[in-house]
Image (tube, rainbow, N blue to C red; front, side):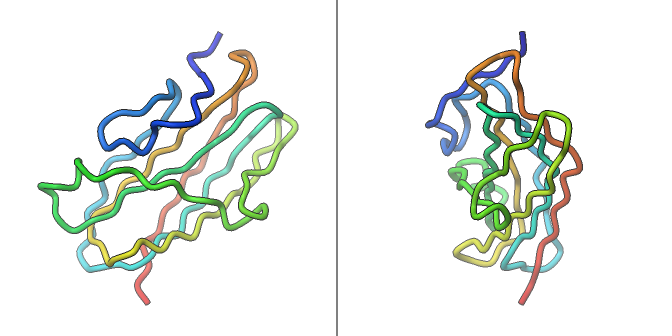
Length: 132
């Protein structure tokens, strides 16, 4: 079986998360201020599974780790990650506009399932910071 569960709360906590299956990127420190992120992620999401994307953004490295994670909704798929047949990966796009400009950001992908034999898969994560 796979190490995956389906906890629907607790992932916004700054230091911990309730789910077993997750991927956390390294912190990205930018040279200039940015005010938006565009994220592309190819997701294979069979029925009964979920993929959630969270982000953090800020300007101070000393306090960045204590900030809570913020859930992001996809721009594609009417705000949901679309189902697939277990073979096809669908490109999912997230347009994220944090409340303030930032020079540091980090992403967390949480994978959930009601069945340890049926799991979502992700590949080809791309992130671009934008400045208006």
